[in-house]
Image (tube, rainbow, N blue to C red):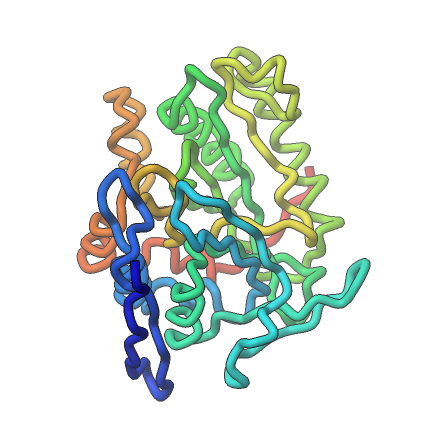
Length: 301
């Protein structure tokens, strides 16, 4: 089959060549690369502020979700000169892409970067996270409904500490809880704090919660993964597509929606695809905006 010719489009003040727009990336529903790009184009006003100035790890699926994928930390050498980068030194220096605007986002989508994984810190100082995150991961037969139960309990713990927390779906199987900080902390502060909170929850709900990644104990329980609070790790960004059977999205939700899914024991109430998310943004705006701006101080336990 002859590959489709590239199409040149103008995005903002940049001209981009987009290729293979008819290539099916989600075979179960016929969702194409062109639709992936169009989703990111439409969601960009809500998404880009959450990407801006955060080192980005690419997760690329050149043959769609059923094909091989690879992670890419180093921004590709063939990136246009207008793509912003930041050098982060660990064992070696890595030049991460910064998706600071819509043209960059569309360029990345054209590279089949389905998933956008960001650091919890900003490029100006990667040792200082701006938030806490807890990844609630269900072990079968548990579902996102059990994650909702744990999420509500986690919210209540933080409310007791005078802190607001915000939920989003992972877009995969679970739920993620974010606590905005936007104050002067390091991972040396946030990681042990998150660990202590996970252990507290495990003591309060031993029948449901795990704070350690022991596979033999995972069945029917929810892992409260605190270990993401680390400068060497990244997390799927809010509004990122996920490489599942359908084009599901990591979606910000309201606490009343979490409670409703829990009460009705219906996991489908917390599953959102690309079109659903665009409609939600149109109706509610960016429910995750407080995570960018709200200033909260980490209390002492």
